[in-house]
Length: 506
Image 1 (tube, rainbow, N blue to C red):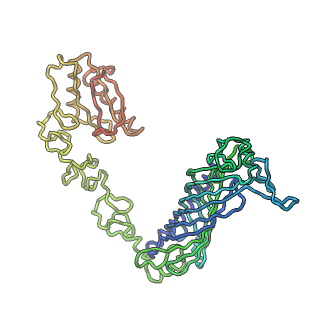
Image 2: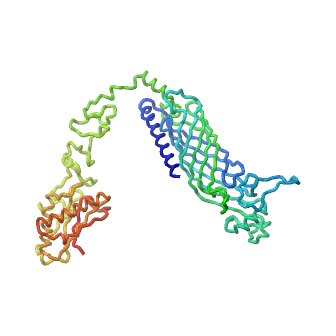
Image 3: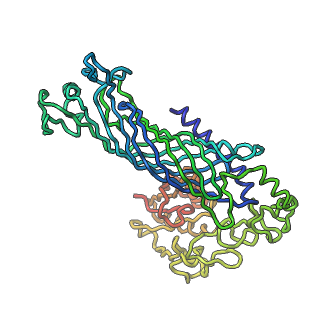
């Protein structure tokens, strides 16, 4: 099964790569229709335990999007009926048909049971369609194309089966009991019964949804600019043994059911005004010659760079970039923090991005009181200069009598720069106040908690917490054992990727 999945993935990549190679060329020079939609009618056949050839009928609709002239994606759906049976009749000496009885689950060619079933189903699938006739750029396009496809889908089944021969019904009831016959066990009058001698019919039922793997091949012919007619043979592998409502624990019982449709399809090609042809019917070589003749290919555009940003005008989405600006591969100016100020003018390239924050012409978040918390996030934007504030910009009142209040201690958080574990100078005063408090309360222990959203964030949170411990020990003689470190998930915490909270340890 793993090998099959690997092959399907490789085929998908090959198909997509080839289609993109064509698509990137044609869309620049020749607009074409990419959508088509239509209806299909199909005879159906069942390949399972009840696989005596008996045709059903289905009808449905489909929509296809052509990524290029050789590759497309198609959604299809059907409503229909599957029919089947297991009776393989032979003729006796008296000329009457005979049915094999007493050989449960036998799949031999000359033996069978009198089982018949009907499945009223609906299905939907998504397939990758590869048009074989459009692979070559040199081969002339023809009016008839061959295509193949594979994909994934689902089928909703409502199946019911029964034994038309009472001897078969008795045999199956005798061996398997009533539990296998959800539709009931009936006597000659159609009444329920559990007496073996009275059994005339047993009914199996299945209702459910199963995954399908559709694959197949088809042909289609174009009839002008708006209509295609085609014939598509599609098999659907379900890996379920229930589509024929026949699943008994017998060694000859098949482990999966497969059903198929042979659909006659009519598709209308859809597009915008000015799109005369459809991708499925483009001739690559003719398109190339037409473009060369009309001088649509401008080779000089590939080398011109009017704004000297290192991106040619052919690919440049911003052809008037200022001198000295850093640009992405498409020529757009780099703005790392998304504040609307390009990096070459931004004095604060990694600003806090929030809809409530305003920025000046240099890309710096406006902070009226200079407490390190931008306006819009600052609950008090008139804090006294040099005041100690928390992460929300609210002033922290430190008790001058630190030696006397050591039970309910509130400590401020330390805010780090993005992706940095280095303590900024603006936090030195906060750490000094924390050290003084810990000196005044010899029994006070502190928990330093960082926040993270990823594995790499755990390492950064650990480095930041330890940087605080190192600072307190090196500058103020605070024992390392009095500060414990840890980290938590940062969801819903403001500045979660930048802050370390300091709290009195429990």
